[in-house]
Length: 364
Ligand SMILES: CCC(=O)SCCNC(=O)CCNC(=O)[C@H](O)C(C)(C)COP(=O)(O)OP(=O)(O)OC[C@H]1O[C@@H](n2cnc3c(N)ncnc32)[C@H](O)[C@@H]1OP(=O)(O)O
Ligand SMILES: O=CC(=O)O
Ligand SMILES: [Mg+2]
Image 1 (cartoon, rainbow, N blue to C red):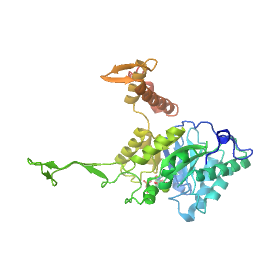
Image 2: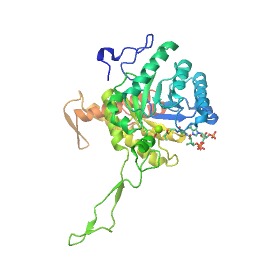
Image 3: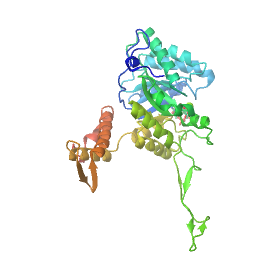
Image 4: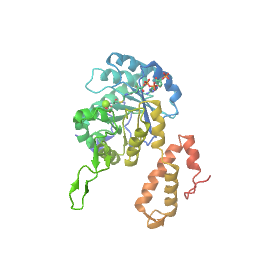
């Protein structure tokens, strides 16, 4: 059950910092996963600061059971030693039914709670999971004397989680966003796939058969087929639930690291539908996410042109043969606002966007 409005923003422990009234729109095009217990990966973290929007120390799946303590301690060491500058610092804790999660939270909050921006909670099933984490975080924050609340991000990777999506988003003012967890979700739904995200050649629609002069279908005729997006339904639900609650949706992992083309396509589908970022499992995927989740110069130029032409934003105008009105100007404002947020942290993008005049002309 949701708390009554008068209590929704009250701290859940005496001395805990006040929960946020609004979740800031911090750029998070790539949430880059690393195993803090893997010496090679950990060594790369300091140099990645400033090159990626989010660095996430992963403690859950992909960390072997016998390395859980080592990874947790590695995360504490990295958190203490690193100045994260403009880059956000997140972690993914173990699942709430695991033997490790309590130690994850009771270690991380006192040790590096002042550095952690967001805690990603896997396999969230419903509001009850967020309520548990919410109260425990408040108690730990109060005990540690933290003055800033740690935000919570839920991975949607069970059928029950998807069914309860709205209540999960509404469960706490700490809720920062949702990620799609396609691998666990596929298993939980008993989908017949064996991949980590991405498409499947068998999930397609096929053109109707050509008919002969008598109208008889020629089933063996050449028929084009189009692969479909397995994740469209879930991403679309996530986008609506997040937008309704003022929080942020993300595509999750794309496991075929070498298939950079399909990864870019999957990320772009998510971007176009309304996601703000995706996970990066390998340094090569940071480049893809940064490219895809940054609006193109052409889109920003067009958006500025429409906004300039629309004046106070009401009425209708024709630009290049197309009707623009209040609704298209609002889309253009979303594009320009994102460009401005990204320009504030990405000097290369700033240069590109600065070359666009207020009325959408691109200077050479
Ligand atoms: C399935 C659902 C999920 O839960 S997905 C989230 C959980 N999975 C993960 O977090 C996986 C993270 N990534 C990895 O473990 C590795 O990237 C995997 C996929 C195993 C590939 O590693 P590897 O075979 O070493 O790749 P590589 O030889 O191309 O690496 C080149 C250099 O880059 C490093 N590297 C690799 N991945 C990362 C990373 N995520 N962050 C930082 N550094 C990374 C490698 O250590 C390697 O370093 P070096 O050049 O040898 O010094
Ligand atoms: O944790 C992510 C997933 O796809 O499962
Ligand atoms: Mg998972």
